[in-house]
Length: 354
Ligand SMILES: Cc1ncc(COP(=O)(O)O)c(C=O)c1O
Image (tube, rainbow, N blue to C red; front, side, top):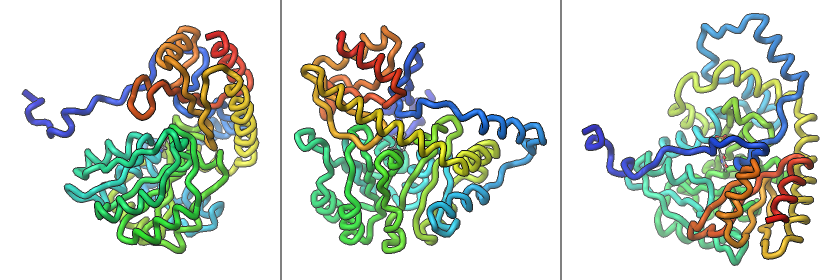
């Protein structure tokens, strides 16, 4: 039986399941609600018409894209590595640093791929619980204590944290980077465009800090699978050794660079979504029995009685949100991605009806 050949830790896994039901409004995966602007789509079409070189492998180093990103961040392009989504970089960073049995600190609840990739990589995840009564804030002293006690190789910090929405202050990130010099501090900023805070400047002071960013959320490009890391050159070189060659398709490199050049438009969309987040928070707070956790991201976590039933009723109406069912830390919680005003109003109306 093929199953007998599978590593024991992998046997316990289940394949990743995305919501595949038909829908009217999709607010379950923190994606952006906007399609690419027409002028950008036209440029992509022109790119195709000129001839695409799709018969050739793409630039394995994504040089043009890295240079564009570097000029924005005011860093050397060699300090940037591009991945097939920041997902790939999470996996690659673990593969660079984590040996069998090494400890990796994973906040909980947070992005599930930290733990999954740690196990796949042979490491041992050490979960630190974020407390609901504390609005799921990171207790950085606890993170420092556990990291030291476990001699952890890697710590994941997610800010704003997915799915809870809270921020970790730059001072706290700096504190853990200073106190835990023998640990790689991964700062996942997948949603940082919506908080307008970043720890990128820390890469000049701490060679153990690596920042992750993505085109999947604020840039509305989840479909091209593109993310990047920013760190000191030494760390970036190690990451480049392990990342698969030709990991970003030429089309994805082209679109990411193009959209990044048109940031002004994206900035307006971000400001709009931040406004909509505040509007949704205000309105959600008026609904009886709903507790709204503070959010600096493009999603909002709420606690609502019988969340699973609410989720199902919304789904019947064609509205997808993310429910955490009766999960221990997130019991009766629902995460709602911020949509357009029209989408948010439909959601609010249905929620109020329920
Ligand atoms: C916190 C966080 N990090 C990383 C990712 C991965 O993003 P991507 O691989 O699309 O760049 C996600 C996706 O949902 C996320 O929520």
